[in-house]
Amino acid sequence: MECYVKDYPRPQFVRNNWENLNGAWDFAFDDAHCGEQEGWYKDFKGNMTIQVPFTYETKMSGIQDETRHDQIWYRRSFQVDGSRLEKENYKLHFEGSDFITKVWVNGQYVGDHRGGYARFSFDITDVVRDGENELVVKVEDSFDMQQPRGKQRWIDKNFGCWYVQTTGIWKTVWSEYVPKISLKNVKMTPNLQEHSLEVEYEVDAPENIMGEDLLVAASVSFKGVPVSKVITAVTAGHVETKIDVFLRNRGVRTWSPEEPDLYDVKFQLIYQGNAEDTVASYFAMREIRIDGSNILLNGHPIYQRLILDQGYWKDSHLTPPSEEALIEDIDKIHALGYNGLRKHQKIEDERFLYWCDVKGMLVWSEMAAAYQYTDYAVSEFVSEWMEIVKQNYNHPCIITWTPFNESWGVNQIETRTMEQHFTEAVYYLTKSLDKYRPVIVNDGWEHTISDIITLHDYEEVGDVLKARYTECKDEIMSTEVYHSSGKSAFANGYEYKGQPVIISEYGGIAFNNDDSGWGYGNKVNTKEEFIKRFDEITTAVKEIPYVCGFCYTQVSDVQQEINGMMDMERNFKVDPEIIREINERKIGYWRSFM
Image (cartoon, rainbow, N blue to C red):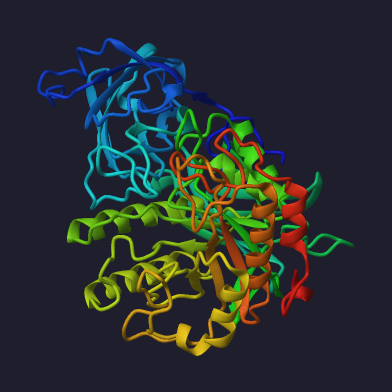
């Protein structure tokens, strides 16, 4: 892509003048919770060093302390070219910091953010000076079950499928110079029926200059060939337009796993003939929609061969060790014969989504769960989920939003109407921002309103698995218990309405490892046993006539959970070509769509 810049943290909205602030920072634990009262933001008390963006719990941070510390502090200096501040603002961006982040620059408080998974930013133009500046960050976290945690533990030891907590900055910190007349955001929605891209601009400019003299131009190209250019007058802070994307002699180039065609686009904000702001981006012409019991990609049924991806690494936990590590994961998932992944309980580094766009990897985007239902939990969840949907909306690889999983955080959803209403509200809020993508509520069981019905089943005998879903469909697609945990497919008061059905968790096969770690069902002793079981259960799922996809658990081992296709160092446990052949083998009702 023309807009690609290695390690750039926001690859769909690229400007040239930026600085990566990762690296060595001063660091301190504040276990006495006295840092603010004592003014550490002016007189920093830390005597440790940490490698940002790795959390203190990880080896790559240079600290590797897995014990709980609820308040931590960071400090570093950075340079600003003061001569640029007359025409440009200086902005500070955090891609992710868990959970409450407070920021001071040169001793002055500039703001805070709540939530561990969404990007947030501060305009610090008024508090920086020419030359050296000081940035101090305090992060507050806890074992509170009301905040969106994902797979982070809330007791002092790992248990079940919950792992070491993530505290503080865990994604890239960076800064950029932004013109005072600039684009704040661009929302891009492909419209295949009209051969056009619907564009919504948010513009940051004084009201008194909006009008005929302020224009926004979009120049679209495909593999270096110009396609179209549309210039729109900016008469308000929010402007909408449409861009034709039809290529002469080539039609509309669509995005799919087989052909992930992407268009380049350059946006320019022009005032009185001068280009004030230039942003590079890209988009895809891709449509995902539900048609009865089918999921259609660009108007054609697609069988989704997904794998569960938790995005953990041995020495860096939730933080990818490098951009190359993200690419390696995607390539190895493809090598296993999967055309997509379910990013489980995590909002991944946006560079991962970029490479999924480029390489044609379908993505289900799933929110990190809370584990206790309260008014506070509802407020925190909704606020952060809306941020995430808006931030990642433009990525064509994302084809499904999954805000809830296995009734986590809504533990009484089967019968409690308040919790049912909460999930419905999140469903409709998501739809209010995204009119096309399916939304799943609640993945695994006890669905309320949901565009896709997803079922989790770790049965290890293929024949039993197949019989359960072919002989007992009516019972399963009801409020009767179908799962060994005592769960049903629907919460009380809801019913199956012909939606597509996907087995969105199955497998989880682990090798015998002296009883250390765990997987689902009995462990296997040999590669031959693994392949036989994997083949039987995967074939069984494919032979269920009304099921249009699956999601195998999982990509790699994660701490005590050793049921990955790879270990934590990303070594395959069995030959990926064998797994690929099984996954891609055309079996059953959906053979013509695979």
